[in-house]
Length: 572
Image 1 (cartoon, rainbow, N blue to C red):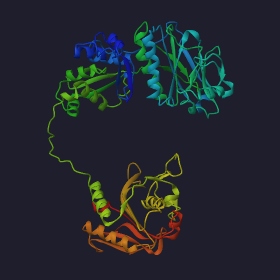
Image 2: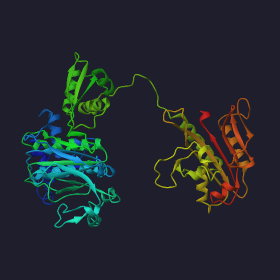
Image 3: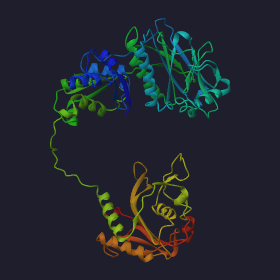
Image 4: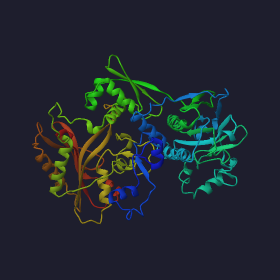
């Protein structure tokens, strides 16, 4: 979860009351002496852990506002966007060249804002918090803030070759082109992490004003010309992005948190963004939307018995202004733009529980007298795992992903015939598909432990993943047991004996009608004439046999192997 650092004095001043004291004050109160408190610090910074999806709590302004609304000291603000007083809206044009790097951009203006040293630092800190959290280290969204009085619209968002971009970056004394900037910031402890986002692109995104002044080169650095200071009165905010939805949320959070310092609090001047296809949109959206919940449903899911008025009050304390409708049977909730985390009724119900207090919810015995039990498949797996180990086999745990060759070429199979799930963008050749058999993983384990004493007897009970159109997700998991015997002789009798022991433990008789039996079959993975199907109640559940020499060689082994692999689902 994100950690927000807040100076104690700033929090106390904003709340209008003292809640906490410094380390030095606490020691003096406890001991009644100032001797032990001499070396104690008087400056207090609280590190507040907030939920990762509560972007409105990532700064002092949001935390204080949330506390004051919760304590019913102030009403929840109504945020709104307004047209500029001059009637001329700031415009930003997106050029087609940006589509191959960062295709989206949104913008807004904070007009007649007044910064103090504390609010200015909080403004910068919120941008950093958003960059690390919602913006995914600037990969999805990059924020740029500029002194509007030093630049002139309309603004142009385009992409240019690195060598054609030249400007004086933030807090630098001379101009650099983009190629030089990459070298300059490659050793910067803060900015070097963002360079790979665009370094290998043929063009870099840039924003210019109508006079040709470069505002920023997102997501790396802003220009020094338009940097904001304590004296800045009008702030132009732009957010470039690869994800438009995230960009809208970031812009809404930033302007709602700091519009309280504008001459008209909680109002934001709108800006127009013209897309490369000629369409336009007005930002920020600052969208309020409504939801309606049944009081009975809320009470049932939280585990309380409260009236609609009480639930509406609890939600209002959570910055979700609510009112009772339809004779108290339902509650209508207004979701503000600061609460991007609310996307479903369950999110609203969770806020009811938080406001009510989890510790205040009475513990009750469930109406249904059910008793918890282990999942039957896992229970069977654990029992088999223990018994196979007692027979003398050692358990292996292998990766669920493997290469295409592991389940095809090395097993003398055609990859097209395998019901394998393929990874669309594999990072390595070792992890291209989801395994369709456990045999390949055990063979690779043996190949990595050839120096171990013989015989080697390994087994694994895990899932394989198979494509199956009968399932809504198109795939299914199948729990299998696989065992391999590796020695100077194949040890088919050892593997056959293991199969008989497993069936004995499962109380399955050797019978064609009501039990299990084996029958000869041909499989390219196994030696001709040395392979058998395992049949249980008329259904083939697996195979056992001596592996083909080509399979052994392809796994870089030199001694014969016997293997067994069965599906354990039918025994549940």
